Length: 474
Image (cartoon, rainbow, N blue to C red):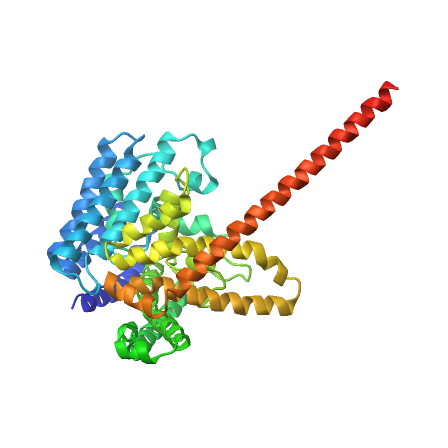
């Protein structure tokens, strides 16, 4: 029932988004009206979809606003981060272990996760803009920094607007305010088309919206067909485990995990289409002169399915969450950036043990993938044939790595995860451990060779120096 409500609300939001762009255009409606209407509709959708549970979303937003107003700007990012992550975690513990430890369904924790991203993003950008020396910020941090605290209407509109309240994505505050005030498209345009009356022709998102809706339909169809034909749970059947070869298990694991992804393709692409239909998400003009509506897109399906590296896959999956993790963790951590970022991602997703299996497994897989690419890729790019062979090998390895790593994410619990890994002999864990050992040995050998070269070079220079001294003294 909750999933039906979710889809119904998103389709309603799509229709409202078209109306919002057409009749509440910044040239026709005051900023106050656009903020207010976007917020009121967002609140209604949240209440309709989640009932009394939506109070958790509203409570966290109000508490975080109090923190932003009364906490010092030097520490607002820390307080906001602890409050948002702590509240989210408590709600997830309560939902999973007290009321329903079962298969994850659409519920209030999804919007709460998006709100957590927005709260922490805003807090860090506010801290950057009001406390940090601009010279210490990266170019991206400087562009996204906020110079003053937003008012209450701006704050709740950013968090509760109908375009992103149910499925996101999280965008940065400055971009959202620019959209509401009508500056969003102007700042992105690299070519300006002018009418006879010298007014700006606003790029139409219709083509992008229709394309994304077609992707939604295809994704939903694929999910409902392939996922039922190849359920991941079948791999836990004792008969399947005993009678299937390792090769078939790996193939089945790839197909079944691949079949789970289209439901995310559907939800995120529909959310992107809603934002675009409202006029949000414009990203300038590409080299061919086509309008781009992918600024807040959450995925690139082609790059995901054709990924030839672990990094390429991650960079194109849940893009806005990856950007959030980079903003608040990877770019801020003094050390252990990768490990802490994966850990935060696991905590943010929830308290199901399967999430931690996935993200803790992902850390060494990331290290190995990066190390192997750095060490061997240059051998294969000298000719076109070698490059094709390299791409085929790396695609196969990447897909096997992803399917093995994300399987616990879909299984959720500990027992089925261990049973699945045991049925395939923990093969990828073993491969990763062996690869890490080999990489560490080869890295040590390279380090020793480098030291030896430096020592020989230093000795040669020293001998040459002595000979020059003797020569000049005679």
